[in-house]
Image (cartoon, rainbow, N blue to C red; front, top):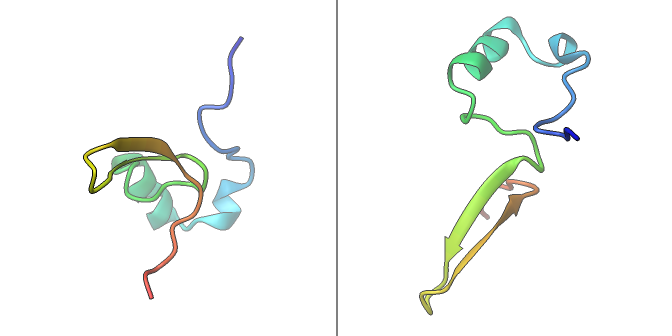
Length: 60
């Protein structure tokens, strides 16, 4: 019964600024916590793969 729908928010006020908290409320998908983003990739073969985005690293 129940489960985790998102990350624990204990102490979030010590991690994010007031502005960041406001943006998170108004535009929740703008910044996702690691392990809570969902992605779907379409391969060159036309096959689709879906999964959870664990990290988002800048391209090199």
